[in-house]
Image 1 (cartoon, rainbow, N blue to C red):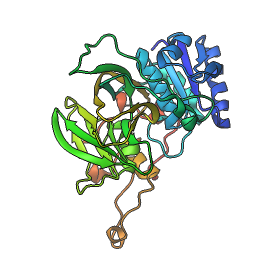
Image 2: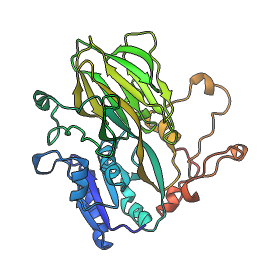
Image 3: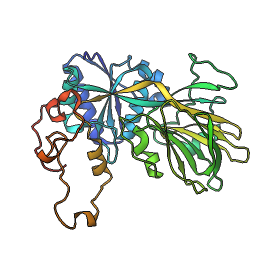
Image 4: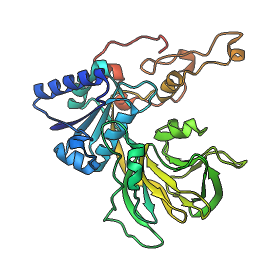
Length: 369
């Protein structure tokens, strides 16, 4: 693809990210590509995703240097104007970033030479019974890093609004939308509706709706299922509910999930991809559903989601399973499977090219990763 403009989102608190940013700027200079740092805390104020992307000159590609939190920032910006996003891995336990920091320039070469696949990821959007607002006295309580919290979502002017439909908000969540309690001594009481039907009324610390991509984030920590990011669906997970039914529910992509704060509940905070964006009072509601737009993430080789799951979650084999006989074989996703497993219908890598080939690196061989 022709890369004319690169937007750079950097985890400023990590020296290796700062060094990698210099490499990206150098690559852009060598290839006559405009490169603009997208500083979400610029000028001491917090700007919207649209303002940030426009200030960067509407980039074709957004490169994130950091962990999953940095990638989420970049994804929010990319979704605003349908830009591609490339995540460079500097995190510890994340699942979103794609490229090792040591080969960032080779990865940019691969994008320039179109040795890539664009992976489409599901996003969430939402409606609300009213505009979301964050009380002014909460700003200092939740302030962190170099600036204030994100502003409330804007209204989408391209959608109908009304008492029954609510207000369409300009939201694109890659991980999850969460309704959670504000006070430690009082849970939130929320009626949960799936596809227009009441599932149950919950009293819980929080209730969340996640994408398959977000299934390994807050939902997983709350006991939710691990879902392939290639799947489609909305994952509802209660957090510490005071009721016997504490299981997650996976709904179809066309089955919206609504959360109504009940009369005797305390106030509830609404967080979108980990960022506080508003507060709900009893009687308020939000509806979460699959967004019409998708995130376009750059992938340079076959996705090894399950290998990363084993590695990042430090999964070990049950002692009883490996006490006798030979352990189950392991092999890198970039090498052929053992002959006796070759008949399995394993998904091919994007473009039938491995990540190592895309980055012009030698194969690592059959050893376990």
